Amino acid sequence: MSGKMLMTAAETLQSARPSDGPTAQTLHGRTPATADDERCRVGQALSLLDSFTVGTLVVDDTCRPLVINKRAQEIIDTKDGIFLQHGRLAANSAASTTALRQAVAAASEAGPSDRPAQTIILALKRQEAQRELIVSVRPMNRNGFANHAFRGAYMVICDPHGSGPVQPNWLRSIYGLTPAEARLTVELARGGTLEDAAKTLGITIGTARVHLKHIFNKTETNRQPELVRLLLSSGMNLFNWRERPIPNP
Image (cartoon, rainbow, N blue to C red):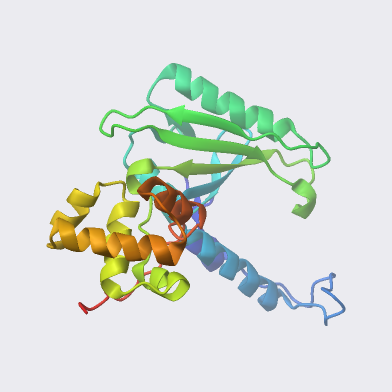
C-alpha cells in the first residue's frame, strides 16, 4: 500500500498543509480559526490516538486503512490475526476475512442519520497468541467530510495480551495508595494471583495480604475480582503514557 493511502496518526499531521485564509466555521463565537489552527487541532487529536493502547483505524468500504494509529500498526505488523493483503485488511482464515470485510461494508452503508448506530464485534483467531483479537466495527459520521459520498467505518482492535498496564502513579493520586500498594495493585490488574504478585515483587504472602487489605479499604472494594473490574472500567489502562518508576518506600 502506498504511503498516500495508509498513514499513521503522526504521518497524517506531518502531511497536513495549511491553506490560505481562515476557515469558514466559528466555535462558540470565537474568531474563525486559521488553517494553521485547524492543523494543530487535528494534530493534537491524532497524537492522542497514538497514545491509545488499543488499535484505532478509519477504513474505507473495501477495508483499506486510511488512517491508523501506532498501536493498530503494531498489531497489523505481527501478521497474526489481522494483516494487510494487497492493501486490504485480512484475517488468518478465509471465513474470518469475509466476516471482517462484510462488517466493514455493512457499517459503511449506514448513514449518519441511522439510529442507533450498530457496532459489529468480531473475534479473530491467532496462531501465536492464545487469545483472539477483538475487533469492533462501527459506522462513521460523514457529516465532517466535504464529500458526503465517502463510505467508510471506524475500527478498534483490542489485543488482550497487549493491553496497557495500569499506571501506579495514577493509583496513588486517585486512591491514595502507598508505592508498595500501588505496585501490588498493578500486578493484580494483570490478572495474576496474590501469590504470583508477591513472588514477582519479592515480598512475602503475609505482607501482600496486609497490602491487599489496605487496597480494598482505600478503593472501597472487597474482593480481588471486584478490584480488577474497578481498575479496568476506569480506563486507566487505555493510554500508553510513560510514568516514572515509583521508588521503594
